Image (cartoon, rainbow, N blue to C red; front, side):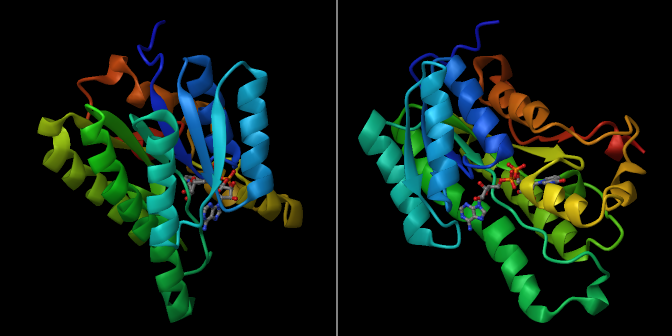
Length: 253
Ligand SMILES: NC(=O)c1ccc[n+]([C@@H]2O[C@H](COP(=O)([O-])OP(=O)(O)OC[C@H]3O[C@@H](n4cnc5c(N)ncnc54)[C@H](O)[C@@H]3O)[C@@H](O)[C@H]2O)c1
C-alpha cells in the first residue's frame, strides 16, 4: 500500500525507545526523512543507525522533553536540516507510582504532568506552526488506554493521559482548517523499557494489567508504531481529533 509519504519529514520525540525506533524505521521504509530526538544519545543514535541500515535518512538531536528550549531546537533542527516538517510523534511519558492517589507524594504530580502532558503541549506548540509553514502535516501524541478509562492505582497517570487526549482533541479542532491533523494513540500494556524493568524485578508485575486485556497479551511496540505511521499517512487524511485505542480490546469493556 502506498502511504503517500515519500520525501516528507518526520520528527520522532522519544525516538530512541521501542515504539519510537520502530516508527522511525517504518517512516524510513515509506521514504520519510527522520529526525530522532531523545534524551539518550546512545539510544537515539542507534535508531539513526537502524534507519540508515534500511536505506533511510536520519539525524539525531539530543532533547530532554522537560526543556522548552530543547523541544523548540528539535523542531528547528528538522526544519533547517530537511526544509520543513510534515509529521511529529510525541512519545515520551512516564509512570511514577503504582498506588492510589492518597499514597502519592505531591512532587510526583508535577513530574507526571511535566513529562507526560507539558511535553506534549510544548511539542505541539512548536510543531504546529512549522507544519503550517510546510503546507500541512500530522501529529500523533502517545496517550494510553489509561487516557480513556480509569485504572486501579494509576490516578496520576490517568489524569496526565486524559489531559493528553483532551489537548489533542482541542488542537485538532483549532488547526484542522490549516491542514494540520492531530490524533493520539492509546496503547494497552506495552513491553516498553519501563515495563521490561518492572517484569525483571517481578515476573508477575504484568498480570494486573493483562487481566484487563481481552486478547490476553502485551501490545507490541510495532503495533503501536504501525498505528502512528497510518495516522500520519494520506490514507488517514480524513482522520483528526481521535484517540485510537491500540489495546487488544481493553477499553471496549
Ligand atoms: N508501557 C506501557 O504499557 C504503556 C502503555 C500505554 C502507553 N504508554 C506510553 O508509551 C510511551 C513510551 O513509549 P515506548 O514504548 O516507546 O517507551 P520506551 O520506554 O521504549 O522509550 C521511551 C524513550 O523516551 C526517552 N526519554 C525518556 N525520558 C525522556 C526525556 N525527558 N526527554 C526525551 N526523551 C526521553 C527514553 O530515552 C526512551 O528512548 C509513554 O508515553 C507511555 O506513557 C506506555
